[in-house]
Image (cartoon, rainbow, N blue to C red; front, side):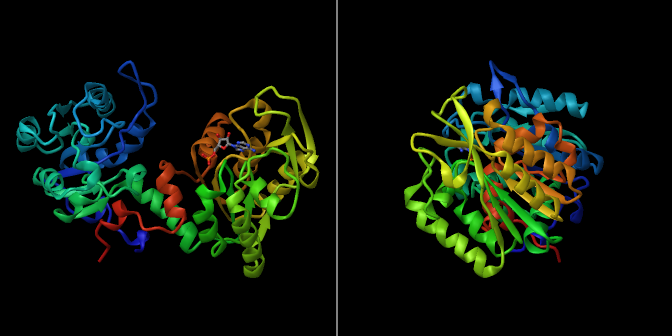
Length: 399
Ligand code: AMP
């Protein structure tokens, strides 16, 4: 699959057509109120384009995990309300317990050009997550064209992300297009040097990404809890730091592979260590080959911040996923902040993914200094692993 070759909403005539759009409206709710609507805002460019083109717009999404049955707390009603405000027009919710029910059919049939409706939560149907043909066909029966714009669920083969594409001409929306353009170009044809920075808790979560990036990048930087498994493979004492014993051999092998491939592989040279896994624990800075027993590495140290910043400075493309330490705690956030600053200061194409790294960038006010902030956690990791995402593979290729 060449993700860069997918047809987009601009490659198909949508005017006067019924267009089913899979969005990611999986927003956080508290007492029925939306607490963060950035996913709704991210979906607007595609919806607005369809309205301008005079399409009849049928939106759909999942919200939370209702596990295949109607549950009012997972209703998309708050999303319909918020969308109506942003779009300055009524977005009618087809409130069918079975999603494609009498309301959905009637409203879809009566839509006029540039009108917008929203189906109920697709996960009210148990067939959705099993990608069963029956529900895919029901969804397809409402529309003439399918647009997938939900990158966050593109790695899942569900009825509304993949199944429905078998029955309708299927293209991507602007959000998916942006994700695949940035990440696809970084992987296939990056401006070099390409520097990848990986952090977070577990080697096992990112092993596929590291393996794929070893064939593509010029420099690979490892920070965060996962770095200690690499240090262990070098024979260092790592005290009580995070360790995945079963990954030590693989970690050592990856460093050897990097050397053989001519990839610069950088791990922390010093660390901020703590007595316990506690925000206010006693802390000190030590070199990586000098972590005492009974202490754990909770952030990279100042020498490492400088080392990483120097490597980042020379990059033309940067892929960053995962924090350099326990960045949720102010006492152990300095490494992640230093990397965010270094990335923000380069003129490189910068792609940031992963909840904690994105949170650090947002908190520091650097969001608009990054070329692209990925909207999909699991989906962006699978993309970086070089896997084919079913929700993208199902879309039509450009002629
Ligand atoms: P991930 O979801 O894999 O990106 O990992 C993010 C988590 O890794 C965050 O909750 C961090 O607190 C945690 N983390 C990062 N560095 C360390 C560390 N040195 N020790 C323990 N946890 C860490």
